[in-house]
Length: 386
Image (cartoon, rainbow, N blue to C red; front, side, top):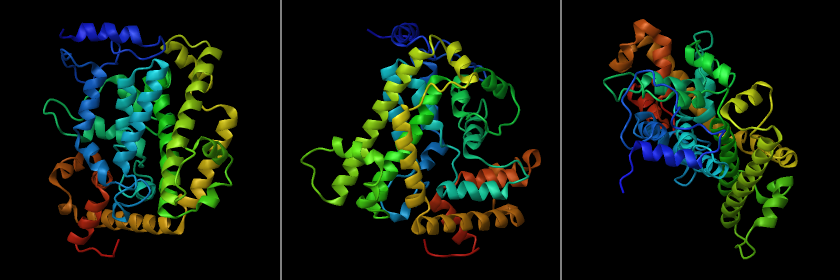
């Protein structure tokens, strides 16, 4: 039997926990639209994100390793898909809205610059005193303004709860009605789950990619307290070669982190008597952490993050790639400042409204690594091997 919108809403209501965000109250879209006959609001948001230009470009944006380093290392797109999968798993077990969690996860890195965090540092430095740059803030800007797929409105016209989920607490967002709502309501549990899923995902896959790349060794990792948990859970018949161990370790670690987080969230929801979205807001404002690992696991996770920071993110080889990326962005930015004719017309049309610095920032932030490198060569600015 064909299911229409009302039947789908009824089914959802039976499944969702009382503290979840239901599709009956998705938050208003900035530009009113008729409801779809068989796709619920967050499903429509998800589809709009997947079909956006910004989402497609994630494939050639750096996570840790630039695209030229190898085909099997994570990029910004594979990372995003992994975060979405983990977010859906946790949300399903806890009775949260899977569609909302998945949608927020798919959008969370849309504003990320090329060359990973090095690119963000470069744009942040270039935009200091000119409105700044921060990738979470840019993600919101992408979905509200920069995407141009629909003639009826700028951006993707997403639901209010989706936009609130994309916003990070404490971010330097422009004052708006949306920001007032975010400060008043705080994040949904779905949004909190995405934030933790992001940390879980990059920690597991960076451990795996770091081992596989050889930037750190197995004996380095064995010093970590969390490695004992991993070792105890590894398959007994696993081959002893580095690649087999690194891939199995990443998978096992992912499962350990997700399982601990789910158990911890369930306990905290009971401990703080969370029975509604309003209870989630009250807990947030009273600084009660609803989505966090158990205390012992959190300390081990913190040690792992510190290890990855020192051994991977600050590794001389990664730093070398990062510096090249930053230099590329600095050179492009300065070139566009003095040669605005090199900026696409669609960006130049907004110069009077937003200023040259902002449109240059938008243009560069939207570039993929490879496009930025090719642009550098085509403009005849400078060339160096990647």
